[in-house]
View 1 (cartoon, rainbow, N blue to C red):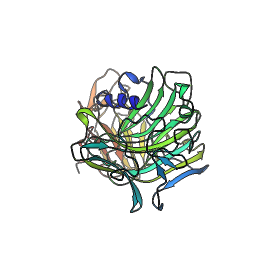
View 2: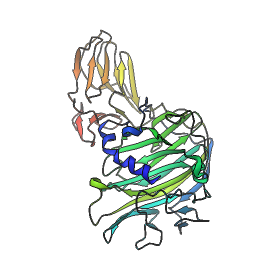
View 3: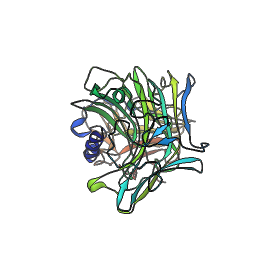
View 4: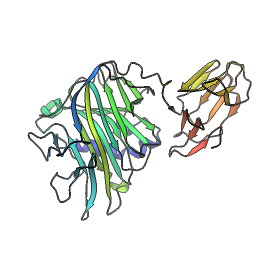
Length: 403
């Protein structure tokens, strides 16, 4: 409902402060599977497509029936004032190879833009399981709240169900590089589990946001590289995400002290929304050895003696004598910590954002000295400087190679 979306907005600041998981009192904390790997759509086929790169006319009405999209939430739960397609200003515009969704201060009244793929009777497109994806450019403006999300159509068709399933593939706030992905179960005691991944290039060019929804797991993707995987279980109740889900895309605005400035105009650009049916595409979600880069949140990387983590052509290797080494595809050492540690040692990206080498007693042999950076990330890349620690705003805090 719109109330539920407003409650979620009220929890955003707390969510950011508590580090990538809690939606205030609404979220149950859970083990997060932070992964990165490629998506294989070989055994999938497209079942629904909105290709705005070639589309001439957007088939949208305020409430239906019979249109591909409606411009409001089908359950009449708008938490923003979403402009009708033919309102005082046009919230949707097709041209230049993309669809523009516009949020705007129009004569002192704030408006957002919403698209939903079913009408208030549940007629339209919805699908059980499969891969859902959008290609978009986000505005990054103050007070903006773009989203790409799914809701179950059963709760639209049966308003007495009093239980709804929601999956947020993308939510993003203001100019923060945090990509929010969340699964919800809405009833009298709503619950949810979420993750925030830092994507420092999110405002640079086009990016894809996707979800592979399967009976066993939900795997979330950014540019078809997995960023989060969670078992298919609705949080807090004995159920799974096994209903037909419809698609929503919106550019909303925040309210209260976080609202956009007076006179604002912000656009989200969308190249396409596509849905596939199939399975098996996320079987290698945990394999990121062929990726160009990989990002770890704090506490997510621990390397024991003799082990390594790799991206394409670059290894981060912690050898048996306790020396942490960056190696290229030829085995040449690009940098190393020059440490010796043999007492059950390991390299660890701690919850304070400090990358350290420790032995089993907790004695430190080397550190990046980036403590106080719990919202930071560690990035391994095949482009110089190869290894970086960034803060929550994507500013570099440390790198072994200074360039």
